[in-house]
Amino acid sequence: MKKSHLSVGVDVPWVTSWTAEAITGVAPCASVGALALCQQEAAGFGKPEYSKNHLLRQRLSVQRMLCPMCGEPTQTGDRWTQVARRTWAGSLRRDANGMALPREIEDARVVIDAGSIAPLHKACSDLSLQHCPHLKADPNVNVQPFPELWLVTPLLIPATNETGGEPLPAVAFLQLVGVTERLDADWRRKRAAQPKARAA
Ligand SMILES: [Zn+2]
Image (cartoon, rainbow, N blue to C red):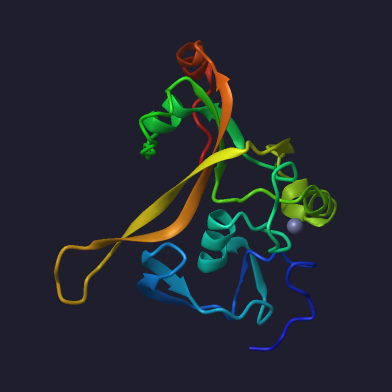
C-alpha cells in the first residue's frame, strides 16, 4: 500500500490503526508477556482508520504511558484525559462486564475510567480538540487531569486453539483506570440515580 501524505503523530494520532496493518492473529506478545491479538506494523501506509486503535500501539500506550497522539511518554503533572468517565470502583465491579479490581481498592473509591485511551500531553490534547472532527462532535469531552495512581486491566478474548483444545484467553486491548484519593460514601445512591449506562 502507498505511503500516505498524512504524517503519524502529527496529522493522525500515533495510536490509530492504518489499512495496511492487517490483524495477524494470536501470538505471544512482549507488550503484555502473554498471548495477545497481534497486528502488522505499517503506520502511515494506506488510510488511517480513525475509529480503530492499533492493537500493539494501544497496549504500549497504556503499559508505558505513551501519549496516544504523539507516541512520546507523558509525565506526572502533564497527563490529561478527554473522554474518561468519573465513576466508583464499586460501579466498575458491578457493570455488565464486571472489572476485576484489586481488593484493596474500596467500592467507594472514586476512579477515572479511561477505557482504552491513555492520557495525552496537554499540548497534544489541545491540538486534537482543535482539529479532530470526532472529538469536536463528542458531547462527552471533558478535559481533566489524570490521577497519579492507576490500574491496568486486560480486555481478554477467547483464542481458538487449532489443536481443538479449550480456547485460551488472549489480550486484545489494555484498559486503564485512574485511582483518585477520594472516597465517596454516598456512591450507591448516586449510582442508582444515574441514567442507565451509555453504550460503551
Ligand atoms: Zn503527546
